[in-house]
Image (cartoon, rainbow, N blue to C red):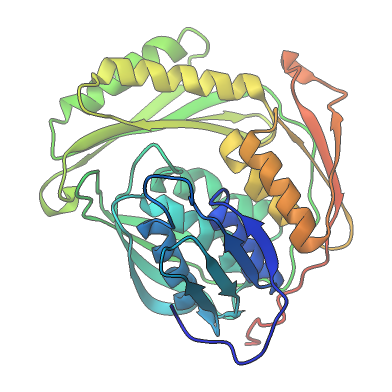
Length: 372
């Protein structure tokens, strides 16, 4: 438990553990307190997990006045959001049960609306298969700032690579500016893929694993286009964290600036050749799905559209994931924004599942921004 409210506030009610992080993010942005009941009440291990409690502590760290209360069994959480403050020289230790990407993705989302820029060091696992890796957030997610009129993208620096089970990774996230408001977005063209880039990393294992990852993935992709370049990133000694591991991240960029990503981190017994082929085929599935962003960035794109000015925002997305559909419903509850969803009339390059997403922004403004 952290703090106790002295005034009664009306709480928005939610059930279950689904979308826990998104609900906390939306509560923080909207200023609306939430009450989540029956969190894994029927599971063998009831209640919130250690990474969810850690996420609440992170929200405390970057805000002023946030308070949360957890009952004895962990099946109920009350969260009252405070002011997004930001701050420099912050540190947060992430449990190894979830990767740093789980926390970093929230920081990327919230950073433009803080009072001051953020500078924070995160320690834990840098790569797993549950969340966007630090590599994807650094190369693909942060450049989306520019699409919404933010002048400078955040900086993500990997000081140490950390794999499961022991982690030991260290990542520094920093922003230089904050925003007053976002810019309306009109992004209606996907285009054809012009090149593929990627990164194969190894930590505490032979650099040959990276070479084998690159060769096997190129064996699939070079049949479709010649411009494929995958960089190897080898970590040794103290920079390699506490556990050995390797993985691959691929991204395909189109002529319109759309980017599709796919990534995996190796589990025990998985050969580099098999992993490289699997990630290459995952990337092709994302390209086939279409949209101006891949499936892992759909919910972030739509959230920033909700927070934009009271103007028309329109993007083309691939087939919506179940996660995105749940987020859309919560955006309506928190910000009062609804989306018009229609089949994409162009259906360019044979992508038949694309949809057009249109909304009127809520006119969100960062009133806490520090005037310099």
